[in-house]
Image (cartoon, rainbow, N blue to C red; front, side, top):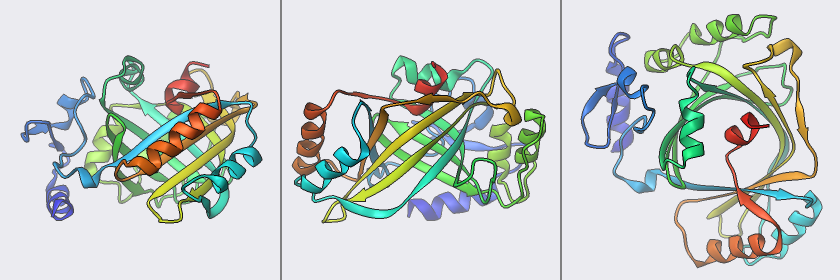
Length: 267
């Protein structure tokens, strides 16, 4: 039902008046919410639409060691998808409000990024993603960019091409005009799934970050993070199985919760 309502409303948005729902179920101008970024991009009272996502940073633990631990765990995790490189460009406003929200620990916040896979310089069918977060619960809206985005000397030209992409919903376009690219990152991701198909675990290694505020796309200064991994647990509903597994992993290794965006921007 939520998706039907969302599609109906989404299709009626006018370019000059992009709206979102606030926490009190009132329609408000998207531009107004951009002042604080403290309201979710869309509204749903159905928490089944949300997914728990919890990330942990690990030091000095090899992928091989982690994978053995996964296999021997009570969840009986096994590989679910081929390993691949994941690339992202994160967006924020000139005051870095999204960054500050995360640093301040605000539970209701938004993240905006462009994601694609494989070669960093080959942006084939990238996804523009908006994630609304409530504590550890996330809901995401994605739009595939079908236009060819080409790197050049000018970051602003690249960004303008993204904003003017064909088929981009006007509400996304309106949102991007309030933002700018601030951080690029890429990492090598492995995918695992529990035997009962309820829990997913991703493991990110070979982490690289580049500040886009101080550099251009064709001459990125990558900061490589050696001996660092990020493990992310993804599940619909919490229960003893996933809690025990996370406790087991966290007690065995030195781990701390993390946001890749804030981590990379602070390097």
